[in-house]
Length: 339
Image 1 (cartoon, rainbow, N blue to C red):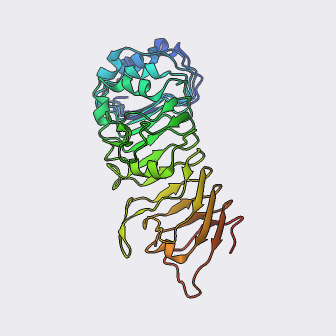
Image 2: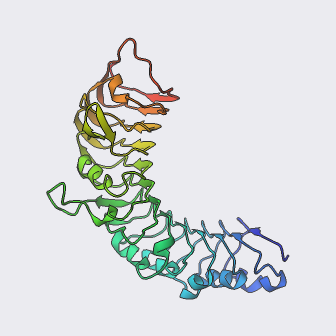
Image 3: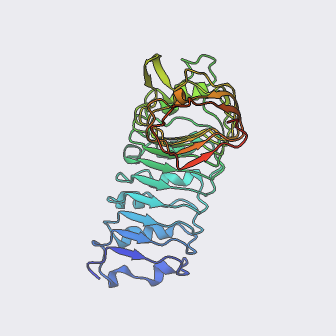
């Protein structure tokens, strides 16, 4: 099979005996194979990585998700995988220290580690990449639904990072502990100037939302498109999204399309001068303790809004009789709102 490009062996009942019984030299696809999918099998030992590195030298995508893999492999795997861009190891039992095995994959763009056995703090996990070239190539990192603890720490090693998913963990802090809004910007977001999607939902984060926005309005202000902060303990009033004095204002997140703040502890009265980011397509503020009157002026220059969720607050909706929205909603939730 000298021209074979993609090999899928999903849910084939493969186990640790497979590398011994399947000899790739018999099929002659060592240079042609670029996509290998071995998910939903019963591999438990890291020796499968050695088999992969001996099987093909031009692999671009490798899926080993939904196995029972654990433990680290040799650095040979990272050095041999000089074309690998996408690696999916979700639904296994890897620990944070096992990530050292992948720090030398210099072409890796996406690493998915959803639902593994990472119980360390985030800083310890990310340090496993600090001495490898993957820190420069990685664009998408998914560490969701583990048991990662403590704070969202230094992300500055990932200069090309575009998407970070830390949802469903046990994170509690973002800040450095400084009481000053200006001094409390952590290194977490100082160098993430390409970040487009940040998912911190379903954690235990409890900062003032204004401080969080201050973090993010620095380096990734222009790149951020999706911000998931729902189901935490963020508190305080809903911050203003604009810079300058009305009517000459600019939004702090000009590219933001999705903003999810549902299920937090936000309170206070929504300011009459507040303007939502103009490019928003989805906005969720439901299940907080927000008060005030929502008017048509809050949606000024918004033409792309499709989803609006305001349920379970203490909000009043009062729109001008002649107001003609520039957007068309496809989904709206207004439970408990006064219309």
